[in-house]
Length: 299
Image (cartoon, rainbow, N blue to C red; front, side):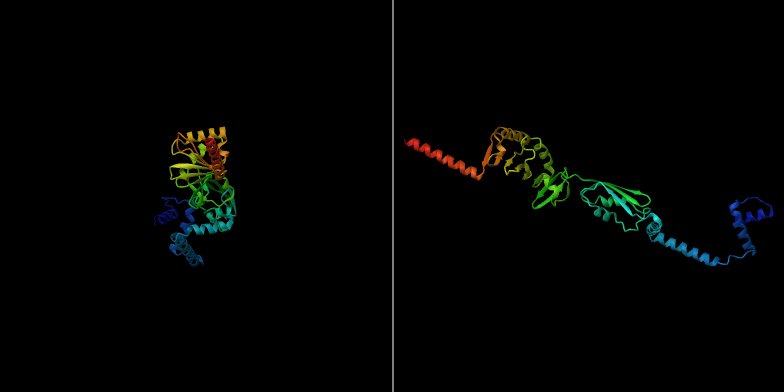
């Protein structure tokens, strides 16, 4: 009403308010229709109906939560569909697994694609530590991953898994190059193993010779060497015991002798268990010596 009054005053020369230039033509049209001087356009009713239906459709899309789908469909068909994915940083994770997590269907739009949600899905993969996902317009998705670092194999019962240095499980062990990782066995070995492995790697004569680190009752360790010899370590004073074992090996080649076990659990003594063949030979030598002693005593 205010605008129309302003038009009347403008037309009669009583310009109290001057309408902006872009409003003057619509105002004249409304004034003519009001005075019966102008007829609506021929297809005005059909146009108004089409606009009404279009607005109703837009409202339905928004209220139904389908606005994102419509945006994806429209933008993907005008040249913004993702048709190239560049993946880097993956050594253990297959590209197929990454693509499945991202969930592309060939018509996924760059505009509506949620990179944060894609990151969250990718880091659910067992080997993935972190990842960045970037849009490179017009049609490329760049994914850069940082994977977890395998430290050892942990055997608990019959199950063997790959673990990180902090003991967290990465994935089940299925062979391959991970077979060369240190093997820790038993309850608690996953968490206590890294410290012992670091200590053993510093000991001359033991580095590279330990096949398995066996946790006993989650209190102490046995070391199984690659030649089958077992070194029984004490619950406390592990580093001192390892140093003593290294000294004995340097002086007597202890680790290479025909023995099955070296017991270092007692700080004041060392016990060595001979291999069966060596034990048998030792027993025969002892018996022979005993015979000679008795024969000399009779003479």
